Length: 266
Image (cartoon, rainbow, N blue to C red; front, side, top):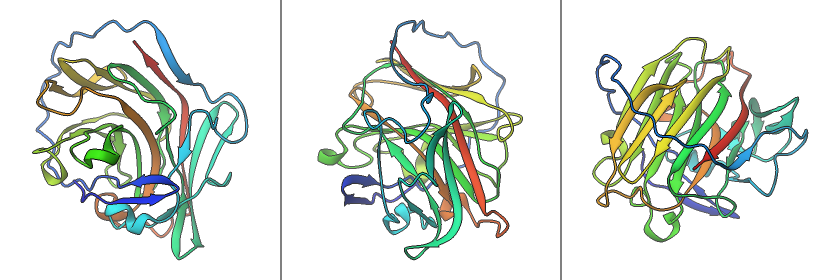
């Protein structure tokens, strides 16, 4: 799904994945046994107006040479691109000429601030409108600096393409299943860009399951043979265009991903 591109820019910048896999055919919804995770261990409710909490979030900055995917955005931490307002986090992509790029946006990450192994993640979010938008809520293995990608593992809890409206992508990347051979599936929902939905992950030593509104999108058996048994950190970003996002509609001048909360349970 992507070539690995790691660029050190203050906080280490890590490429998004270039996805070209063909999702599995739709199947009847299976009976899913959901684990019981009841203890809240970490959260950001985005209730304080202004910049996101610096105890929780840092930023990847710059154009990242297209972040491995020929993307168009330049990531900043300006309030124009990332701000908490009226109870939600807003990551804004703006069409503007900025340091040689044609769009600006933001890419937040909890690297070196919060990471964990196993549990349940819930993120309540409303996705941006516009062909060429590519929002993502995802995770990378905390050992990426030492082992690289895809050896560190990647968990894509939610990705959405403006050109593939309402189709939610859930994907794992690891050795043997990365890039065009990523292990993923999709689920079609309604109103992804006009209503908030809950995107969630259940992660244990035996299985990894990803949901939207409690509907299973994808599951993968976990084991010691794949790199999903150590600490991972969060990334939330809004990319524009690129090899996976596709051409951007020239009429898209602003696009926003809103996040109501992110929570981790054990």
